[in-house]
Image 1 (spheres, rainbow, N blue to C red):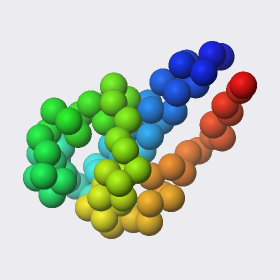
Image 2: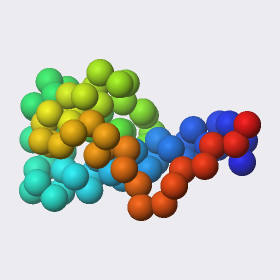
Image 3: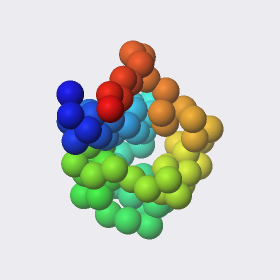
Image 4: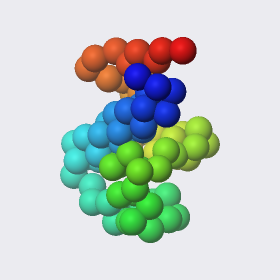
Length: 83
């Protein structure tokens, strides 16, 4: 894997985690967007891995989803970054 591919894979995994936690709380993308003061399209981009939220925004996601921030980065399989 190249560094760009590693980064893309990590964005997808973070996005999938955001989606899973949102769904576990029975929230829509629109609900989360409203609580984050953004729009549902931006939440969708984060969940799809098209964009990676900043660390401060991850902290806000953690508050909205009522989880510690490290839960946003907890994956079933380890992430291996080469390089």
